[in-house]
Amino acid sequence: MRKIGTFDSQSLAERFHWFLISKEIENQLDEVPPHWEIWVLDDDLLPKAQEELTAFLESPDDPRFKVSPPKIVKKPKPTPRRTTTDYSSIRVTRFLIVACVVLTIYTGMGTRHPEVVNWLLYSKFQKTGPNWPLSPEIMRGEIWRLVTPIFIHLSVLHLLMNMYWMWILGGIIERRQGPTRLIILTILTAAGSSMTQYFLFGPAFSGISGVVYGLLGYLWMKSMVSPEEQLGVPQSLVLFMLVWLFLGMSGSLEALGMRIANGAHFGGLMAGMLVGSIRSWK
Image (cartoon, rainbow, N blue to C red; front, top):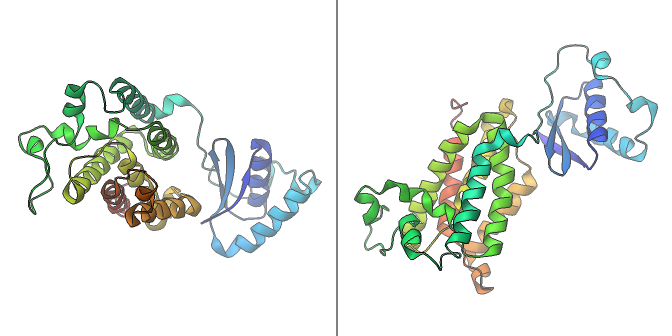
């Protein structure tokens, strides 16, 4: 499955989608605000689809592109996969974003209300020795600390970037697989990212970027092991996030003054990929 084009106009995107269907080129239409993306399901049909796209972009008003869906479908076709803009369908995504923003502001990006910050963070103790990556607080039963570090961000840029990707990736999963799936993925990837970061680098970390990498890893694996679920993620996004991860782990970003939780990114990504590779979990 490959993305062949991006449209700024919904009407043009839908017209081209149905035109490809009329040519028996199965494809799916994704809304990724503010754009619409066309994905071709069969790689063997990519050259033909790209040829048609070039012709369409040169002359979108050509009468041959003006097809009517009910008339051109010769047999039942799946409804194109769409990402609705109905905000009521992404309650968990919105809650996570609002919680991150509110708690980040309330704690002054970790500089105010230390009693709240200490209650949310993974630990205030440095890990000693090659022990299991659970903090002393969690070992005493404070299991919420596996997840709650995701709600505090330490800079405006840190917050804005994470909220953007959470809106995109969390929204995709919640709209198509429901809020329960997103809740479970958030808990698993938050725990995986926190434990990895604590085990490798200690307790000084916060933010939801590990979950973002986890959701990316989940969608990436699902697109490969269960393509029928139509949970593809643009390869350009995967490449961008992997390059960012590599730059962080190489130390290049820290040299520029950016504090990066590389262990959280890596642990979240691995947790998401592991869950996404479970074909039976639909």
